[in-house]
Amino acid sequence: MKYSVSIAAEGDREISLEEVVELADAVAPFSGIATGAATQSYGAQILVEAENLDSAIDKAMEIFSKAVVTAKLPIWPITRAEAMSEDDDWDDFDQ
Image (cartoon, rainbow, N blue to C red; front, side):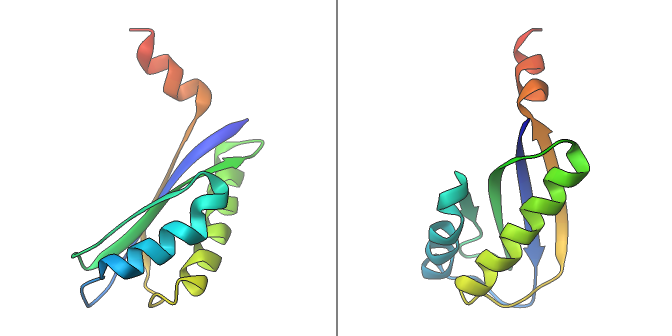
């Protein structure tokens, strides 16, 4: 099953637009997007294939950690990691 996983990290300085672009490039192969310009945080939303929610978050956190290194961002504590399956997403539209 496919999961969309959102991950964010917070730190002690402002993130530049150029840094967010580097992070976006690093997560792009995973249908990823990045956020954080002009804030003291950065994050990404990544699409992963996994058997369950926990393994989706684990996979996405591994991808995110590698992307942070690739983008040469500071290694900050992850403050949020949330996942939603494709089924969860479509359930919202049934109402």
